Length: 475
Image: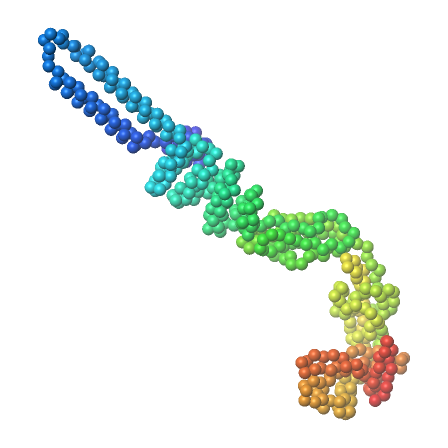
């Protein structure tokens, strides 16, 4: 048929024109069974009337004394009764037809019978008429959608399910059924983005919870954007399986950016944090965005007794102001509270070294103080020679039996380790060597025995260290 509004061809059973969108009211076909019943009833009545008339004419004998009744007078009453009977019959048939046409139950039952018989186009016409009569009945839409599914018309199937999820008259059970069928349809297409978008607009919490795994919800920030006078640990949370990606400079994040695993430490400075959640189906959420200005009063930096530069005599690196909460590194990286903590003066290492010092407290820090040192001794005695001299002394005295430090069959041994070079008692530079005991399991610990080797003469001494003071004993 053609659309009365735009003239475009329409598919059979449509309630609307796909070209112009105009709603169309379709009047169901006249029931063939009802038409045959009327024809048969009229035929029986006419046959009965004809037989009665012929019987009356044959059985009636002429009465000479009776005046003949003109033919017109005999036929007129009979025709009148026949006409009245036909009128009653047509009125009754018309009444039945009108009742059926305006009965949503009849139209629904007819649609269900047609569906069961596989007459899907006929069922669609009945459902359309039933919905015209009972436009708030959501079950009719569900049943009609199922007919389109049986007919393998996925476009109309999706259309009617969409109408149901948008219908304010749909109850929880009907909504659950419609959402479940739509999600199954989109999942078969691997169209997870449409599932996500549909669920984001769903106001039924039970349905959102049921299909939570398909949602890509925007990450939530534990700290609102704003100005703060302390360091903040920003936590990003989201419901569902997937990953959060974020940036700190206001650029839009994607899967190539930093993946969130632990709270983000917002220290002194300005940040524009943007975050996106990508669920296990690859669907990305909306971008979460917050701006932070962090201004924390800095701690007093450590003050050192030496500047960076070249040295040829031993030096102790000392913090000369408050040494509390001072941490340092020797590899050129900024210290953290997991770095070594300064507790006493540090002997300057031989060679080139880079120290960084900072005073740190939870949420606060000082500026980092860096020193680069170059320390060389003008001598042929090296730390390696000092260690060999100590090991030779242990062999000569019988403390160990070989160069590996073994002393019996227990597989335990003694090892010797160079620690640093210092100026002892203003006498000279000495290499300090520590003795370690290594048990059979390979676990090492300092034995408490220390040795000092003169960096210029190579003489060996036993060294006692007590409360930061050094005592030498010749061997």
